[in-house]
Length: 414
Length: 157
Image (cartoon, rainbow over all chains, first blue to last red; front, side):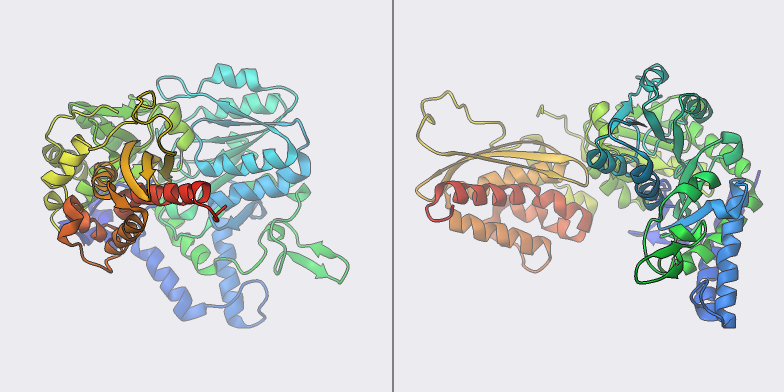
């Protein structure tokens, strides 16, 4: 394990005061804070070797390209991809998923084909498939949730048939924190002949991931949810799939040769990286990965598990708290969504904000999930490697203030 | 701004006892055939909060209004306060009221006493993400009036 109080010193923002109070940042599923090494690397990139990548002959361009490609190798190692060429940089998980919908889905799916998603997907793993389904007349099936916030695998099995071409599923729910049995889902999907896209936005930052062991066909995630800069997403794809796919954005960088009549695409991964990429962001992602490697991702996982278990225990003792998703910390990652009495999540979040506590309130880009559990919004706290038990105490104690402000009984029934 | 100030009694009172809450009784002879029934609804895409409005217009005046909805204290209180402010006002007066409310939330105009309980909501302008909550009912009414004009006022079809 590591000393959480020691590593907090690496994150300058954690010393900030918000509304006169020490910041308690519990919105890590939205984005995590950045260690000084990441901030400094970006600054150093712009002040020391800013240049465009892959096309400059001069020394700065060579240095920038080296740094950019170094991150690609580090990402490949981080998820145990067989080859750095399987790593495509995008601007985020959303773009990574859209890339697959556009470049793979448009080419290989035909009318009547079926895609399976789940009721717990983030909008970014629903909407691209809806758009594609409308365009190509595909069928989109949603795996429902059981009462305990886990997926109903029996229904999933009943969806699988020879028309099922793709299963697009999140490893961890960004609302319920549920850790899905991803290995079993991938195995079942493959035996039905479907390929699997894993949305790893919430899982990759905290669960050690080996794409070869998982046998995932695609894995999408974002740098900014794992200490890195915003504007950098990753798409891992099996090389044979990537080779067969059409390009994504047409333009510079993604071609070998352009004539008036036709163009020849660049090799994978450059075929999918048209235009000048977010070089500073990609370069700044390297120290984030190094930081996670240094702490050890399994230590990060254990730390978060201890926090979530502590927070669940404290919250469950409060009268009027309704927690969504699995109640045992074994099936849950670092996320707890809840409602407090009848108090609207926005009101809870605004009052906590005045105490310096940052939580998320709303539907967390998962409206189908919220409707399926019969609510329109919830409060969400999510932890990361630098959070402490004391912060959970501050948060739980602040709920008392919410209670005090809304002390009157509700006479209105909706 | 002190948060307890924001959630002062007036707002919580409107939230917990919203005025003009519910729907018109369409079966009542009071309403039957007398007015064009107008309604409008809208959602806050940030959180899924929703407001549903019904209102009656006669001789260019909004003579009665009801609302229903689910939302946070600020969106419900704002809707409740709005229903009190717009009653018995001409459509032009309501237009200018809606405009003023928007300007107040943008910090470009101060509230004045004639805005009644809405004065209690002025502090929300310092919480940019919550401004949408306050404006939800007002933008729904704005759209409802636009629909009314398109449907019932000559020369606008």
